[in-house]
Amino acid sequence: KLLIKKIQKKILLIFWRIYNWIKTMLFNKDNRNIKNDNLIKVSALLIHAAKIDENYSLDEEKIIKETLLEIGANNENIDKIIKDGKKIEADSNQILEFTKEVKNMDIDSKIKIIENLWRIIYSNNEADVYETSLMRRLAGLLYIDNKTMGDIKDKIKNENSSWPTLLMKIVLN
Image (cartoon, rainbow, N blue to C red; front, side):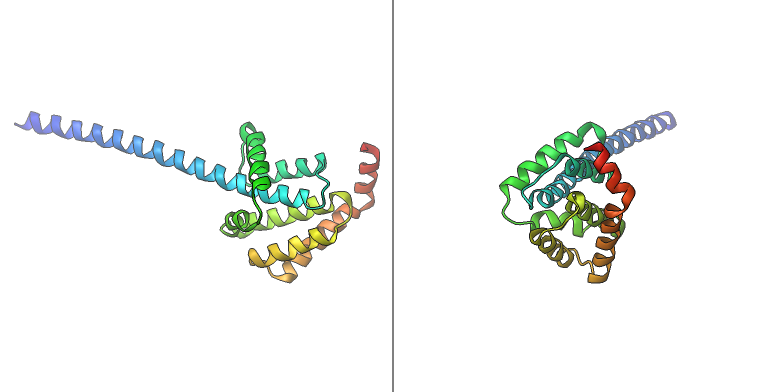
């Protein structure tokens, strides 16, 4: 009888480990899918900002890739994320579905995205009326106060207008 109880205990332990392993595998898979969906929507927002002036450049795509990598994308699937983001952005007529994902992020990730949105806008050294309007709308949708948004804008604008940056752009182009 004692031997049977020990065997039953070991079998139960084995089944418990298998159950936990399966649960972990399924849960992590769901998390990866959710994370990818979020990254695709963030990508769509960044692409929208890049296309709003009707001049989508390689510099802007580079900034988009760097941003996605900063917030957790993998090098292996970055091109697919951007491709899917372009499709979603082209099929959408409003930015609300993209901003929901950013709104739910921690403040550091929000700031990184806002900084890189301004980098995309100032990648051609100027911001047009549509780009600045987009950023004002995003400030409200993402609950970023005007002072923080202005500070980030000034930081990126100064970063882009410094003479070493301008010299590098001239040399590389």
